[in-house]
Image (cartoon, rainbow, N blue to C red; front, side, top):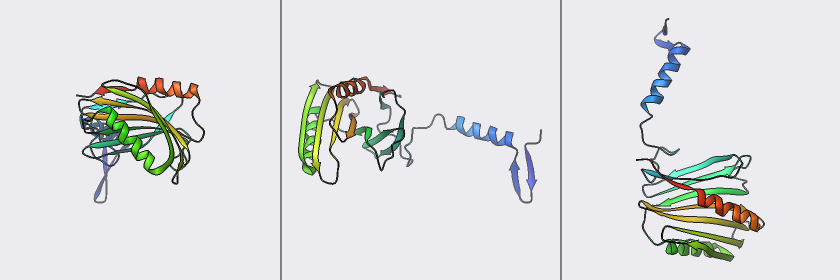
Length: 190
């Protein structure tokens, strides 16, 4: 089998040779660090939070990382980053503060941009804190509800949250998302 042919001054690879070359590149890169879309390493190195989804297809729409933080966002299939109604997001901060102070800072930042914020802690312990909030009359934002979970790991603090724009979550939806957030797993990649 002839894998190459010469066309003037350039070499053209046959389809089978291109496939083998691509496969070799994939295998060679298999042991590399996980990178975000912009080429920066995933944060934190060595662990990640694996979300649990409802029965729908969710699409990764955004992933950013700096040296000390990361953001990952998912939308249900059919929604766009410009016109979404529901979102599932994961943040990471490379710091070791109390979960209560993380929650209080988070709610304070919400209150700075919204006239009405009703927030409460659902349950908490030393390693996780579950919360919900409802924001109305926000500057340039529709009314929305969020249910979330802060998780303390040896590397920092994660926050995973489900957000819905519009009407408040029903009790059934609230319980469903609290259960799904509780199923999110901290995984070690070392």
